Image 1: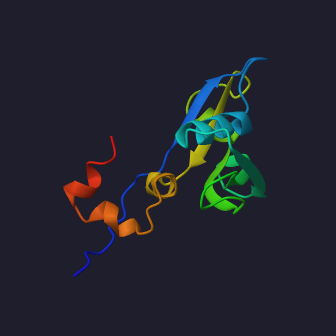
Image 2: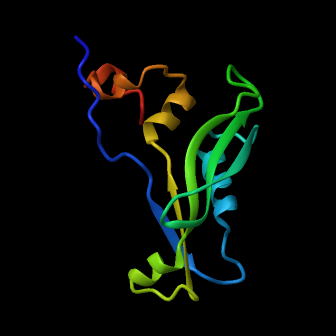
Length: 135
């Protein structure tokens, strides 16, 4: 019998930095993260406008690999955006001095794409033979 999938928080969260002329953009940060995670520059990253209540602007993030079994196929991997100034203010920070980026990517989804895994339930079955392959 296959155990039920349990919901748990495995989504990435947010990061922030002082607002300067050299501050990275959420787009550049997201592109860098995706390319580093998949250990390749041979992919395209596409941002589609979207709505999330705590970010403005907000976007859905898709990737398309340049080679391999998923070549040319657009896959949604994340949502992201610049943290709304009111949220920054509610954290006790001045939104004129600080900027925040939020992104939500289920780590299992990214790991499935990276390692060619086709069943999310494998992560929750507790089989150490399966889980030990991920360092």
